[in-house]
Image 1 (cartoon, helix red, strand yellow):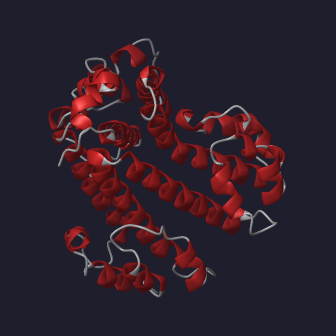
Image 2: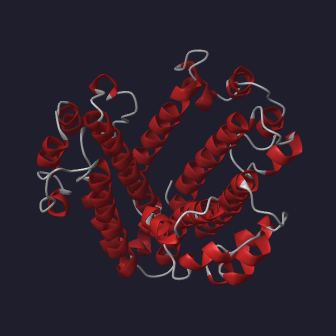
Length: 351
């Protein structure tokens, strides 16, 4: 359903929407994945990828190749596409594009803090950070000893500051508190992004709110499953769920009291969109849940391209590229470790 945006959308954002729809046609197809799954070595994978949009990024890489090199170069393609869109964008699209990177910023902050707790070298940690989530003062995170120091030293100057202020509940940083910090930051980020999309209105609000609701529900399920058997109380678990989505609020009440995966399944099967996900998974196969959620996410992201005059296509394109890179990493790892019989286990076809 279109609002009035179809009258004025193309004045500022028509060019970039055309760019992102063009980029989408460069995503790997099912035929590409079938060919990649037949590869015997990483050099074969490189040879196939040189005929795709990843070609310029991989063509000068010497043998022997490593999986990390392939993933790094493919990620560079994603970052270049993102930066090209960001430098061409005007408000409010530029703010929308920045919101997309906040999730990676949160992951990078958690990576640095966790690595510092285990006395890892800061430069080594910075190399592992996702390039979309980098910010100027990220290296300074390594000197922080508690939550308040983290907030005071660095995060007050970053976009994460308003989210981070909600996390200063614990003085000490340990592995459990860092995970709680990650999920609290994500909750605040998703709620803020959701409100921003609602403010934009029109088709953007309609499609993005659906995509973000799915993300919030998936995180609620993952938090529940990962916290089973830990010291996290039901109230603490409930606090980590986002205050929107299809499961909010009654589904959250049920998830908060679940004590095993079968109870999670029982709670989720009351919601038709998620019933179809859990129906594909046999009892005791919770490890396949991630793939089922990724497949549903890809289906929804592809559907967002069916409408015009909205910003969700930018979000969808970045997410589909990230899924493509996960696919390439899995295929490359299976080939490198001579586990070709498992190559189809985690590949999510996009088209």
